[in-house]
Length: 99
Figure (cartoon, rainbow, N blue to C red):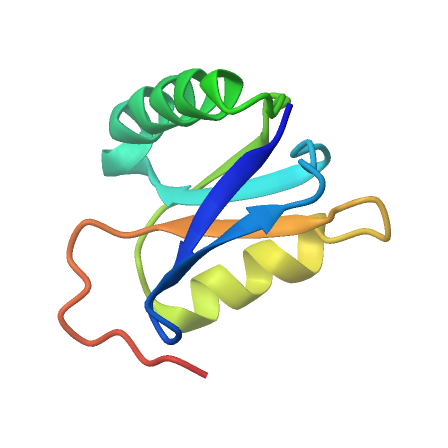
């Protein structure tokens, strides 16, 4: 099955040669966003499945607040060589810094 993706930079479609399953990923959310994160996981898995990509259930971690230090502590406590992807779910990201 041949898959296609769109490149905004080149403004053209290109062939994806291989789908990569999403396994061993960590999802960090605040306690108040836990139910939204579960909805996201369900939707993400359904969309990926339609593209031939299997998404495993994440290791989900709820943190009590959205302070940077709290997220860093969460990462340090759960990050391992097996974790391939890390996702933070933020609902109030007015001060997001991209690095």
